[in-house]
Amino acid sequence: MGMARIEAIASHFPDAVLDNAALAKLYPDWPASKILEKTGIASRHISAPGETSADLAEQAARKMFAAGVDPASIDYLLFCTQTPDHVLPTTACVLQEKLGLRTDIGALDFNLGCSGFVYGLSLAKGLIETGQAKRVLLLTADTYSKLIHPKDKSVRTLFGDGAAATLIAECDATEPQIGPFVFGTDGSGAQNLVVPSGGYRNPRDAASAVEQTDASGNVRSADNLYMNGPAIMAFTLREVPAAIARLSDVTGRRLNDYDVVAFHQANGFMLERLRAKLGIEPSRFALRLESCGNTVSSTIPIALEPLVGQETKRRALLVGFGVGYSWAACEAVLPSKGDL
Amino acid sequence: MNAFYAGMAEIFEIAETDITPDLDLASHTWDSLAIVSTIALIDECFNQLVGGKALAECATIADIEALIRIDAAKVA
Image 1 (cartoon, one colour):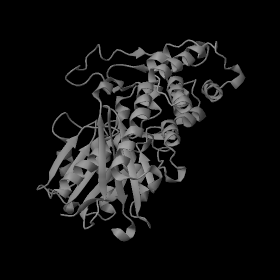
Image 2 (cartoon, one colour):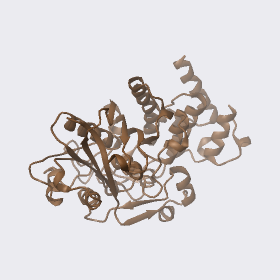
Image 3 (cartoon, one colour):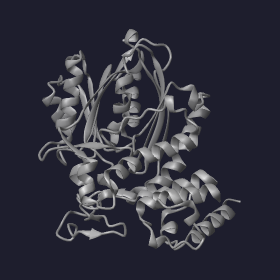
Image 4 (cartoon, chains in turn cyan, purple):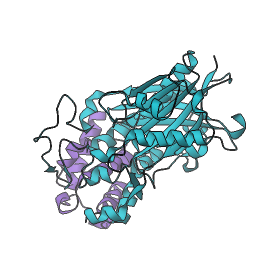
């Protein structure tokens, strides 16, 4: 058995664009320039009514296939989303059919948010390096816009809809091309990034749909996404540096030993604070959110997409963190054109 | 406290000279975004993480400074 390696990434966004000028009309205290300054985001893509995470993931996969990846070679499908098409069946099964993948393959969904891509790499590596699969298609997609109240600027300014398709495949390298990993989970933060109703704990009803205005003037109901921004900021500043230190203990590498450091693209302000706190050189720090916002589990592959299959091979450090709380960090080698 | 005051002035978009211990936070935009920014600022200036709820309950700059000292005492 060989090593698992990232071999291709393709992203897809819905057509509709929500820019800061449109948001500024809704939030009089926040001119477009302030939204850009505070979030690092100029515009986000928004899914159409009836356009689902599976639709976005399908298009990302089709883009990858059009670039040369043979769909018949895929022998495992992983789909990371928090906005699935159905409670059941598993959306990955629906995607197997939509994409015309073989029927003798494994397929499963997993529910993680901003840490999901790194966990997906971990699962794919496990499948490949234990001989259970050779070519894993990892799809990440979310449509948080469908959960966000239009008058909640605390989240509507940040999140965008989008998807990414990542091919993780067996290669004949002798050194690991993905990993090692460190993980983190702290369910005590579950209520700080949450859609309170809509599951079986708190089913949606007339009461859950009642809108309330918070101290910052944001409107939402229990059916909508709620984010406790201060708590998430504190969690991130606490756990991301700690996770990186744990990984460094394993690898012996320091941050500026990496060609690329790609964090979950939460928002520009948080990323800059983390970058400065950790002393990461700007030239190594991946940023790709200005025109798409925070696309949850797709942000890291979207940031890596332009770096795979280029002239030079790059060693990357990846860190996903967020809803759960859930976080994970790992190394990954991004192969050059000549490696593939 | 200079870097902290400069940072608070930036958050409130006012002159640094206007940041005084008795500055009334409620007379400025002491909202979720300002609190998020202040958590990051305190981390930057003092390498301390202050809770958002405690910050939200602060009425003045002096209250925030007291929170930093209390947290510093806890850390020590």
